[in-house]
Amino acid sequence: MNVKKIIAPTMPEAMKRIRNELGNDAVIINSKVVYTGGFLGMFKKKNIEVLAAVDTVSSKKRTPSVSVKEIRQNATYESATKESDLSSQLNELKKLVENMSTKSDMTNFEHYPDEVKTVLLQLQAQEFEKEYINRAAIYLTSKWKESSSASIEQVKK
Image (tube, rainbow, N blue to C red; front, side, top):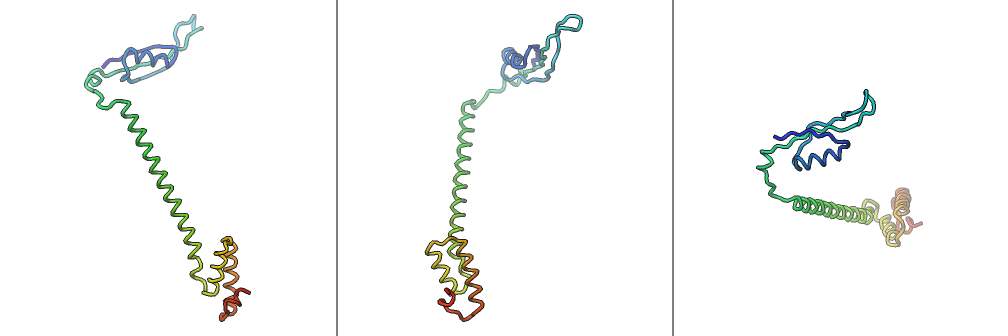
């Protein structure tokens, strides 16, 4: 294991020197701010002391089987496929919600009496808004219940 202590005015400069002297596999063990120089405790310069090490045995044994470029390409491909999968799932959900809302509009009248249902279907065929159709359904159902033997013509009134 190769250990090196580097003193530099800034951290980026210290990192540059570590990479030059120890290589890209170097690991920072410790870093701290130190003051150097000065006269009678005054005019000291602020520096950074970095203790870095590199394992010479394991760095020689390790040889990358995959290049950095291949790793980046795979990561980009995987993120793109995940995004496309998510967008396709989102589109499917949108279609399901639209189908459910359309079906609920069409089958919403099944629990109404036949006389009221025919009027509501006519309103729907004339493209009335759902809110008005629901209001009409409540009103017509209450009218139909008042006179249980009401015909379609009486319900329409």
